Length: 122
Picture 1 (cartoon, helix red, strand yellow):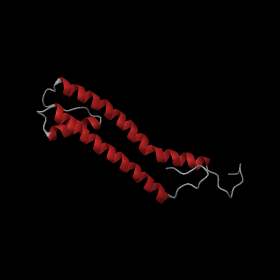
Picture 2 (cartoon, rainbow, N blue to C red; picture 1 turned 90 degrees about the horizontal axis):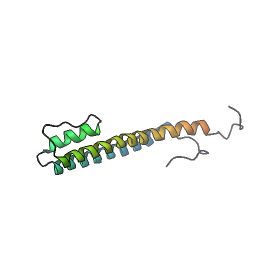
Picture 3 (cartoon, rainbow, N blue to C red; picture 1 turned 90 degrees about the vertical axis):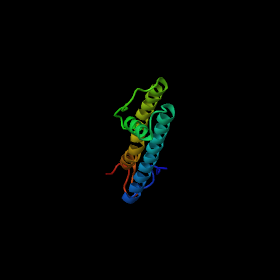
Picture 4 (cartoon, one colour; picture 1 turned 180 degrees about the vertical axis):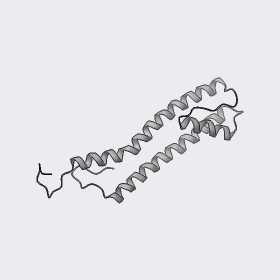
């Protein structure tokens, strides 16, 4: 997926495309995670309507915590806790996916040697 250390660094346009691809992957992960949270809340808590399930799932996904308009059942509490832990890990993973091309580009530029330069020259 990434160029070898002996290859020329990507152009700015190609790097922008790579960043957009990574952002697209993160977006898909977030949408799927939100859908799973909504389905889970709606299925486990039969009194929870879709809008309330969206609110609770999106608040947990965003790191704000659940919004309760009524008391959750024990299975609902377990689901909310497990989903909150998953959301925390998803934030870490999404950050890694978005930072990976930037860190790679920095490391690649630091270690890449142009063929026109002698080793050891700046």
